[in-house]
Image (tube, rainbow, N blue to C red; front, side, top):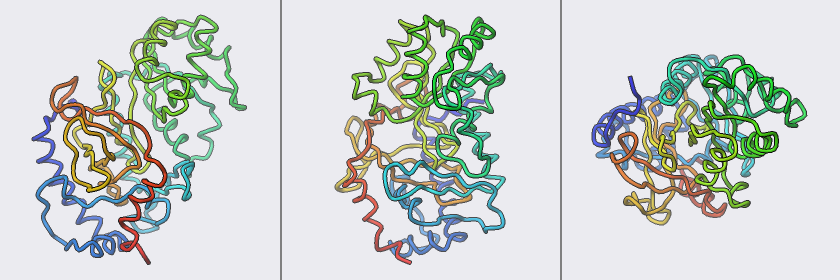
Length: 351
């Protein structure tokens, strides 16, 4: 069954009920979260008229506060972000149920473009990134999470982060005549797969590429999403390319690019709201703002309604490859503005 089946009206009705229940669940199980909502004047059991009215947390709070809705004894895995934007690393606490659900729903989302079969998989990374199984970086968690959807894994980089051209050639000799899966973070895919494939005239035409990550380094060399897709197609034969948007603070939820390219879509258990950075009101279609992400997956920590530090824009609703909103990520907020988002909550989170 597709996880891209709900039109926007049906989605919002279902999500409002589930996210309202989740808000109460986290309030009952996280003292810090309860204190935040109480400081904002939100009473327990208070109904919300729309998704737009649900209280959001800035993602930055997971860098500075221990937010979890499970006892320490039930913590199964702790995920950490890279911490590259300052303020330390986010820490996300999962119990066994949460870890299982996020893996299952990520699989259901990716199955839309991968089909039901596990394919031979080329990882555009180094195996060293997944060595520590209990505490992962965001990159390590992404690699390990995606690895479960493939088989016969080959890593395109050696343990010194250098391209292993022979390993890639051997993989293609063995699996390149049938569909195969490629995964990597966007800039690494460009630098360590596209450039290597072009130089060595490698045929990637049977590949299905899933990639994600910041575009800043690529934009700096005049490679946007359309150019990325064009160059891969022309120089390597690779045309099945799916970008996605996701974050460790909502692990398991990914917003996937449709087959037409250039728009991201929300799975049925998630949505996005674009907010005006001055008024925090929802922006209309076509007007950029700060991305808020909502998802019913986070149950072990209060990450179900999050204000990101990214700018985005909704292009249309129920008019694309899949139902619901289709949107793009435009880049990061300037650091001062990102900090301003968090300052909205500064009084509420004081211990």
